[in-house]
Amino acid sequence: MTASETLRGTDADVVRAALESGDPLPGTTGFAGEVDGRLVRDVLGREPLFLEAAGGTENGPDWAFEPAALAEPVPFPAGAVLETADLGNTPVEGIDDHWTLPGSEPDTDDPEAALEALEDAIRRAADEALASDREIAVAFSGGVDSTLVAELLDAPLYVVGFPDSHDVEAARTAADAMGRELTVVELEPAALERAVPEIARATGRTNAMDVQIALPLYLVGERVAADGFDALAVGQGADELFGGYEKVVRLDHRVEAETTRGAVREQIRSLPDQLPRDVLAIRATGLEPVAPLLHDAVVDAALGLPDELLADEETRKRGFRRVAARYLPDEVAERDKKAVQYGSLVARELDRLARQAGYKRRMDDHVTKYVASLLEDSDGAAAAGET
Image (cartoon, rainbow, N blue to C red):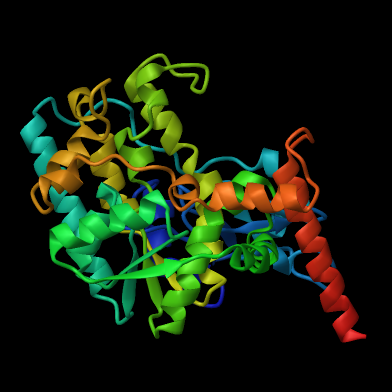
């Protein structure tokens, strides 16, 4: 978590060594903050960091870990380094990368060696998570990603969703196959209405997709925190790292790459935009996120997988599933799952609430408009309560 008042994610000495060596994957789960008069953020943006667009003021900070602390927050680029003396004088687009992802060619053409390296990396990440003194629960959807995390951490399982949702049913069958107990956090529409403004403030985002993705994390996190845990483990990162998306095989208009390997790297480079949303949503519940599959060692092993262990038209995340099958029942290791906003039915219900409130589908981006209205109403109620 916080290594000091000004650095999150790891010790300052680790960052100093990475600055000196240029190593983009120095063995952390991400970092961000200030070290020796320099702002830094890891290559995958796993720790959020924001700058004040106006360059800071005499009465306020010029950078922060949360967007709400700034008047006009803009993300600090992943992999970048900036002298704090240059804050306010350097536009975000002018900040140079210090760390970039390692090369795109696989480390070996031996599939078995690559799988052994991946398994070792995943176990190392799980062991480091367990070495902390945090009480951890798992956000469990029943898919292969969260199920492997749950198995390696041997932590309590929580699933969130509406009663008839895919994720609740998938989590139940996976928990049964593993012989594990499962806590089901059943949602109702009122919970979405209440949580939307809280998520929008915490993440600094109001667009429909981001809010729909953050809602399940936030709502399951609330229950986990209420039950006395202080960390929430997630399976984030596996789809990007290992070729979990259909588009990396189809190579359609959704990707620019012309090969599956290139498309996978393209998805990995999307993580700095996605991860702060998830981290901030979880932290808004008072929990610390734990993402073993985003450990530097796992990222490095994923980048080194040969093409045949990435994805094809029949199976995505081929190498990851083969490692998972060493720990999980086959029915779970081979299972596909829906994106959380759809599997939990949060997207469906938020759309329904928007339409009930008068934001019809014929309107451009009607759910985003509804989210903005809930935030405005909440801020107005808060202001009225202060007067």
